[in-house]
Picture 1 (cartoon, rainbow, N blue to C red):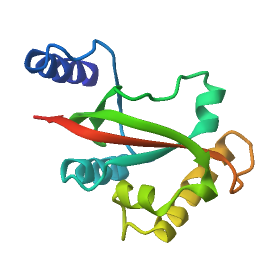
Picture 2 (spheres, one colour):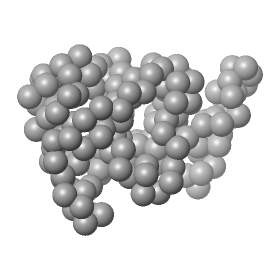
Picture 3 (cartoon, rainbow, N blue to C red):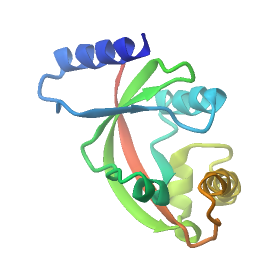
Picture 4 (tube, rainbow, N blue to C red):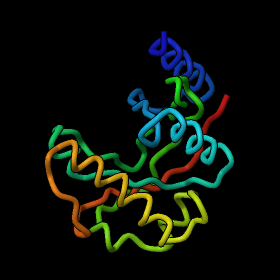
Length: 152
């Protein structure tokens, strides 16, 4: 059923924007239902215009990195579409070189770099534990910026 909701959401978007590409990805933010809902809401409010992900997982799964122009259907904690965002830029940088501007654009907590580092260190440590590797401050992080382009 969730896949049908996603396909219908994309179809409705394409009807209004026929020039949009035929390729998209559908995913949710965070590591659980609550995070997905909270972070998705920040996107809807215009506070969240960036995200960070673990470069190592792209390598392990032989998945391509996001790229400018990529359309993403953002899902809530129940796997239901909330919005469509379009990636505007990608930069891979070491964890300890992610800057204040990126932390602010992620829109989480008090939007400071200290908050970002604390939350993301915990997040990335859990991901590295799952793949039996060690987190360190030079791990490559995919810093993605995006714009909100569609909501129901």
